[in-house]
Length: 219
Ligand SMILES: C[S@@+](CC[C@H](N)C(=O)[O-])C[C@H]1O[C@@H](n2cnc3c(N)ncnc32)[C@H](O)[C@@H]1O
Image (cartoon, rainbow, N blue to C red; front, side):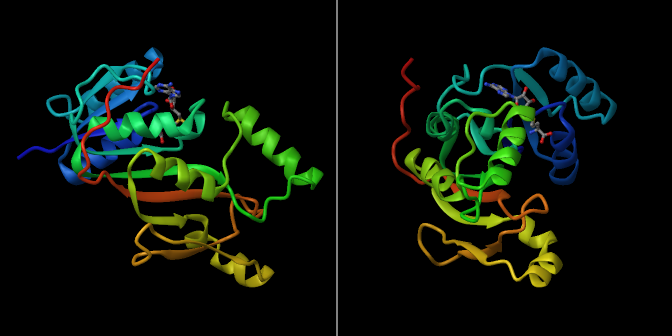
């Protein structure tokens, strides 16, 4: 059976083509940038995936698709752009079949971030301005937003820890630990984000549970 996945805020379709090639999944990329969609369509066509992958021009806060459309979804560095993360995650939850899984990667602040520190605030302002994001959330706030939409957090990991272990050891940075909702599959991360330790790329694996689907987001 061909599983139908969503790439929420898909950019120009780079991850979409890589994942479709690797898994054979059918993927719909959702984006509200028509230029990026045209580039994505060209990329998919060149990869010979136009029979199984497609793009939908839509605002991810209100996607014109039925509840439970997708078997799985992923979203890379994208929910950080949402004016309201909790509502963005509710819409993602709605689009998934009950019991389906999701994977999210996004920018967050670690708890080493200090709003009284001018250097921290300056770096944060530059990240927010250059990436066109509203206020970044801490990793804990981000996980709360995910959970408030109904997802169970299977795993939440500071990705930088995977690449920053040497630096972590050198500088003796404190570890960041975000436990899963059930506490049984939690993993440790570190404060080594963007080479300075105040920011992380948080990787979450989510489970949509089996409770009834939420209705469409009220406007
Ligand atoms: C930083 S890019 C990430 C692209 C892609 N996920 C990747 O990893 O290559 C953010 C993407 O989110 C899209 N985006 C931002 N706000 C959106 C919205 N409200 N609805 C749909 N797409 C949105 C942008 O057009 C852009 O393609």
